[in-house]
Image 1 (cartoon, one colour):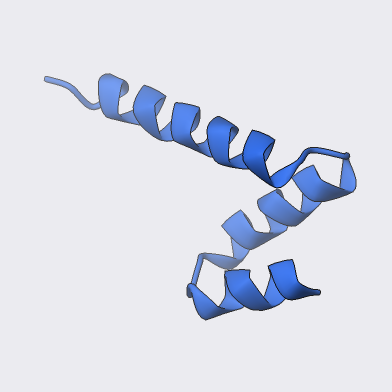
Image 2 (image 1 turned 135 degrees about the vertical axis):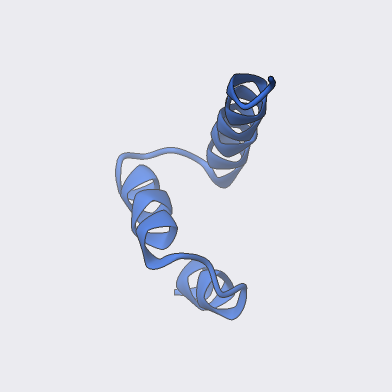
Length: 50
């Protein structure tokens, strides 16, 4: 429940919250989720290069 409260306090997009909660339901740790999101953000930034 604390995770949901923290996510809501950060005003994240509801789709991101759902994705994070689904990942937790699948057994991913918070650190794994953070790493995955960081890798995803890095991949997006590389794709956006001119």
